[in-house]
Amino acid sequence: MKRAAAALGSIALLVAGAWLVLRHESALLDRPLGLSAPTVYRVPPGASLARVAADLHRRGWLVAPHAWVMLARWRGEAGSLRAGEYELRPGLDARGLLGMLVRGEVLLHSFTIVDGWRVADLLAAMRRDPDIVKTLAAEPADLMAAFGERGLSPEGQFLPETYKFALGTTDVELLREAHRALAQVLDAAWKSRSPGLPIATEEQLLIVASIVEKESALPEERRRIAGLYLHRLQIGMRLQADPTVIYGLGERYQGRLHTIDLRTDGPYNTYTRSGLPPTPIALPGAAAIRASANPEQTDALYFVASGNGDGSHVFSATLAAQNAAVRAYLRQLRRREDAK
Image (cartoon, rainbow, N blue to C red; front, top):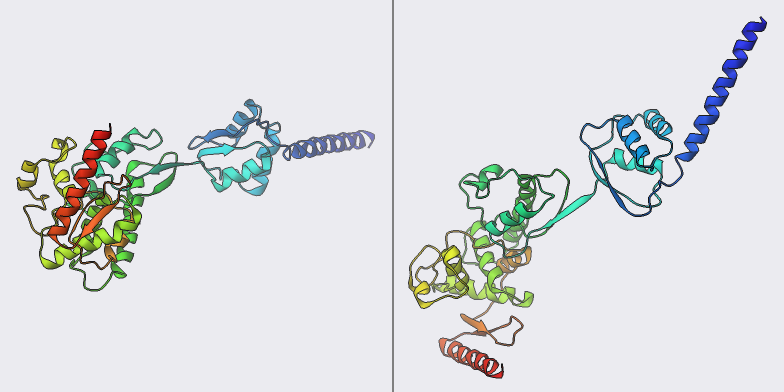
């Protein structure tokens, strides 16, 4: 009996001791991690709870790894850690860290598609970004096939915007999000378009918007420039848009258009051909799309840079007025040259 009592006493002491240790370690979970500055920590795919706890302890951040593991198991979260990058900030404690890893509050990177880029510019920028996983060829033969739209020109099909993404995101996944965003903006703009526009499809709206994007430096001029080009379409006048010619020249364009460029026929030369070019010529932003769907009503058919250096234009309803505006612009250029 005495031996049994002694054994029970020993067990009670061990249980009590273990309880005190666990209580002490559990209290340590409320202490901030040893971080002096924001730190990025990566949980590899497939990493176990024990492996992560050991790594955090090795780094000196987690002082009670066993209690941390037991807490996760008690909560039923031992197998719920999500892989990815996490930004750990000073003041974060072990319990908060566990919640962050379970919820998958991963660090997000950003990538900006710039208004007016060509698809070639977009793909080149994605190849330079170290955080995007590359799966596409440098020059994909049929980029839109990845989105179930085989044969569609990719030009204009991705909405300029800043996109947030987690580590491990591929170029195709990011482009799919940008294409989905473009479709939503284009669909909404088409449904709310002004009546009587001389365009019949969303794709034609996108083409007009791409020209407006390249021609408008000032937000307040977008609707007027859209109205001008749609006015030209309405009356059967050729668009005579320099950006379409530049797009058609491709790598042959060296910064200046020449008379021979305007006279050399091609699918994107809106000086020699009537109507819209066959595809968009750039990636138009949401503002340019909305402006093209709801243009300003204008009798202007011509415009030229004002020469003020602010990107503004002078709009004219007659060729005589346009010629006068061009002469004024050239005089300003000569005065600037003389002043140098």
